[in-house]
Image 1 (cartoon, helix red, strand yellow):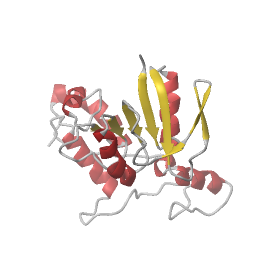
Image 2 (cartoon, rainbow, N blue to C red):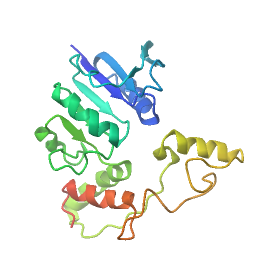
Image 3 (spheres, rainbow, N blue to C red):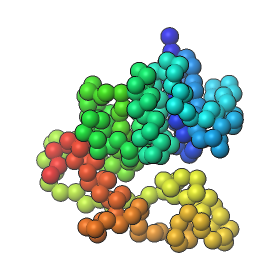
Image 4 (tube, rainbow, N blue to C red):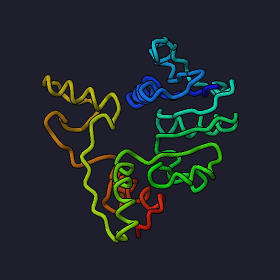
Length: 220
């Protein structure tokens, strides 16, 4: 018997990629539920040659025996709805920043610390995209050579800012002014991601530092 699986944020860029990868890997899904905001409710998404209607995410959305829910709808949505889903016996895999540093929620990268999945209490977090890629390479290096210091440099895609960032790039190529970013992003780099903190680093930079430490790969 297959899995009852839900995708929260199904019409966003990451949610669409979730659905694409699930199809590519032939994930054993028995029933699929697609949730999004009220603005996206009613849209139709094709999965494995079958059409699914996107539902508005509500507090009773998980009252149907869903086994796993993949969340990628922003931190505020995850903070509200992930505990509700978990309370109904659903295992939440959250892609937002909401639960990453919660001491009661495992932060997991399968190639690095798969064993931490065992102590979840209904919610499992994954790190941000830059951290994931970095620790996969750092783990074997640290195991063999005991890394003492890391200098990170990341060049991140506009898709990290969602559809608004993507549209700024496409429209910027046409000469239009940006709406999501403070400066034109077409043919450009902006040395600023998220908000600056009192220590001079941005929130995104501190995410990588703190998430790397939580993943317990022996780094100081």
